[in-house]
Image (cartoon, rainbow, N blue to C red; front, side, top):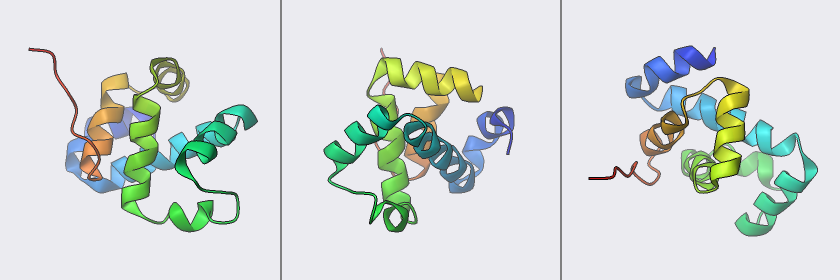
Length: 103
């Protein structure tokens, strides 16, 4: 699914959020240092990462992880053609932390 379509359809449900989260996981895996840090913080290893990726809660956590690091968020969003705010919305669609808004 094209990033623009994901941006447009995030309100349509978890499917688009899952697609974005899988893309974020691929983004993390594309650079060994990014993946190593994620694995260290998540407590996962290469042996159980694939199994964890089948869980919507884990996918939400991947997006939450990306969204909490501004440099990582900007790099992921720019590389995939997403609006950075769409990452938080996608995490929320999967049951992750709801997007925060400044009053």
